[in-house]
Image 1 (cartoon, rainbow, N blue to C red):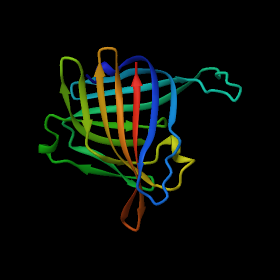
Image 2: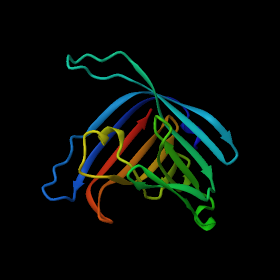
Image 3: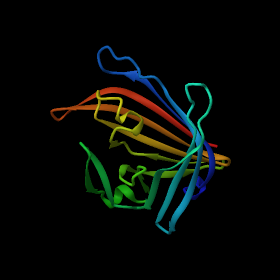
Length: 202
């Protein structure tokens, strides 16, 4: 199922805040982008698989025309089977190594996601479930830094608490995210909004 995510795809990225928890909350404008993405297998070992994403995208110009194509290194996903060591985001660009008890990871895969500069984005673990129509992996909730799409435009929250679901289909795959936007105030987490993300690889 993990190797089934490799290939060339038309991809779209959609994120929408669906509920707010802060006073006088106004949802952010939904985010949408699209492009062509190539997912390459760069490691394939019995208990470790690494997939590198390469993105080809265009921007819509003020004239309404599309820009020339831009090729960029995108995110990377590293999968490890029954891994007992994981990194956890602690806020303020700091990470902590944590150890998981063996009984929590038996039969499960961890997924570590890295940003375009190979710095950590998030890591979590979950179990794959296989059906005749699709295979799906659902993660535990973990903390992660602000996404690149909002890092320079938002200052009302400090981190995301998110879960991911990967669903592999015969003609592509789907990456779903559920993110709580969290503001940390003197060791108290204040929830600002909940966001849903759907990334389609067709």
